[in-house]
Amino acid sequence: MRGIVSLAAALALPLTTFAGTFFSFRAEIILIVFMVILVTLVLQGLSLPLLIRTLDLVEDRSIGQEERQARELAAMTDLALLDEVASED
Image 1 (cartoon, rainbow, N blue to C red):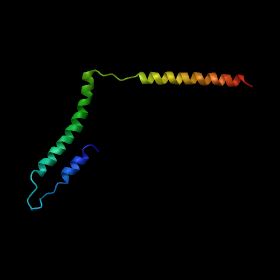
Image 2: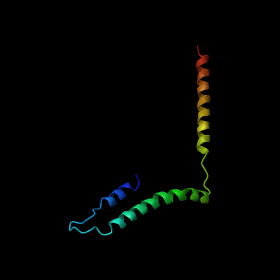
Image 3: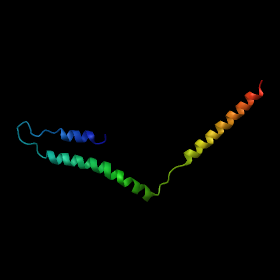
Image 4: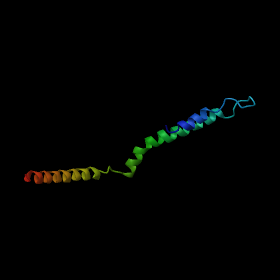
């Protein structure tokens, strides 16, 4: 979806003006819009892994550890409640 509106607007330019002459620089406008879309999508997308390696960013694994601890705490609480209910008549 990104860039489709710009490309649609460029392609919607008429071939001729109201005076009947050809629309000046229509092909160039379409080419420029296409190149801007291409650069913003492809170049940025391909350069992102290189940027991540250059900045030496690592994956944050603390969320998995927090989830594991929360599940363990929930399981221990459930077992304690089951023991309490079992000890009742």
